[in-house]
Image 1 (cartoon, each protein chain N blue to C red):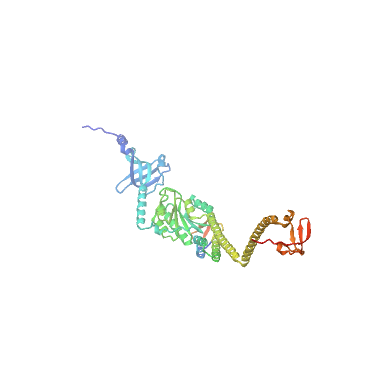
Image 2: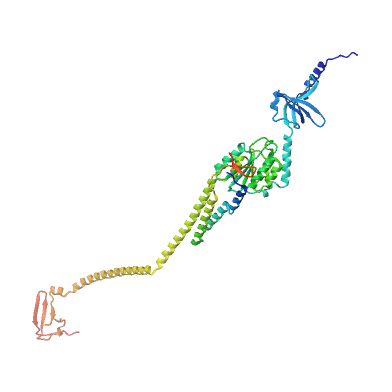
Length: 82
Length: 403
């Protein structure tokens, strides 16, 4: 299995913004807002929807594919490391 | 004066004995540079030890080879512990080595301190330059030897904590000639490849084995690297320049992997926890609204025309009941009164008076006659007794004059 370094860099850029940690903070913020008794039901539904969406984003950020350790070759390619 | 004449053997023997009796020559440490080094097939090592001004030949016998921990080479600066003895056959003295160590162990420490001080003053260890280690990474770079325990430890711990993180090894030479350059290349290659975090390190060893991590070029490569670097060199107690300049220092390669690779199960728990919290918050809001609605509904129902009508009906019923009760009371009261009056009336009953022998006087038309003046002589009238009636005729009427 070989992969070009440039491809990896591109992939990384695509996966930017926002990170898991940021998402968690946003969700916790949403929950705090929802715990306020003054919030209307309509707002609660909107907040809930936004929270669920962000949780989904969190799950999507985790790629559940097991990885083999790779070794970086001198030409920038990689190969499986035994 | 006749002098004694000695043989060469006698002279050399005499000198040998002098040397042998000398306390200092029996056990001496000599510092110098190695030259003319020869490993003999017998296992003995022959060499010359020299400094700028002088030289002494030396030998380490095969039996003392345990006192030499490295391959002795031309130009090595060494400290030799042993004895200076005379070789009688050639009339030469030489150094018999029991132990040879590299001169510079102390030197290395001085170099370490000097570089540490220099880099410290340049601000390379300053906390403001430390990059935070991202908590949730996708790729982990590792600069270490492809053989050895360090890479396996990192692989095992990374797999255990999170098999979805991609580990990329740069197989570097971590000790010996060119190690520092190899480590620098590894850091730069992984930075260019684009990992999220990298571990730079190796397993434990002597100060010489770890030395590459004390080289300035390695320190600079770590400092200049835009990817956060975790140093993981040797054991808990080993500190290298790389540790000071790295964004985070791990005491061992295993610990480095623990710090770099987040626990996937912990993350899943966190997501699950947030999911529950979000649900609870929504459920609470909903329940709050439902109970608010129900309390309003209750209030509204109380005020509805139907409820008001029902209330009035109830009130009417209540009044009716009270009225009935009063009425019954009044009737009972009256019955009682009636009883009393009836009693009294009975006492006054004409029938009773008739029974007692009195008679009721009436005219022929049954109209009561209560006064004598109502009757004229010759009038017919009736006398009613209890047991019958007598028709009578008035003969005379005598009116009693009132006084």
